[in-house]
Length: 193
Image (cartoon, rainbow, N blue to C red; front, top):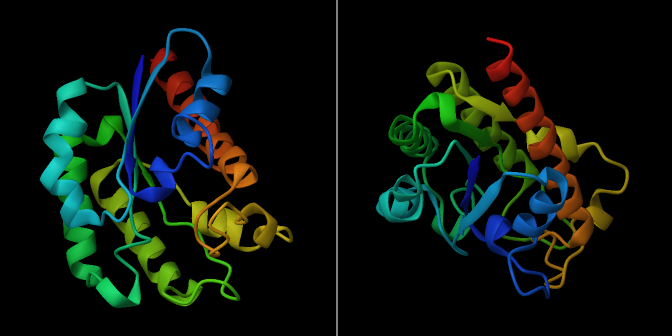
């Protein structure tokens, strides 16, 4: 099985390792016959994603693709309007196909450290991801809602940059657990048919 993780810096960050930490964590959990390809590029938004989807995702002929964009789309200094974000995500799902796509909402931020995004705005982008998932029939992980109420959210978001946005090791443990659980559900559904 081949999994491509498509996203921005949340997908791409190494946090001091020699490879993206999300990839390492997923490989630990998945074991066996899984190839995990990281297609994260820091600073990317959904427009950038559409520009590189062919060469970074489609070319690999993946079985499944996680799609995690939104932190840059929702940033005040380069905000992508919600209707454009939704259209871009819809186009991404169509190119990958809904059966292979796991849309992941943006994560919340620690507002005491992060000044380019707020959780109120990120909630709107999360709602848009869910709407695209429902409309296209793709899979969905509501990372924002699952994380925002955690008592230790600031610890989970504490990474090397300490900016309230980019995860540290705990954040990648959490994100990879969420993806792993979704993959288990998907695979069970596929093999029970």
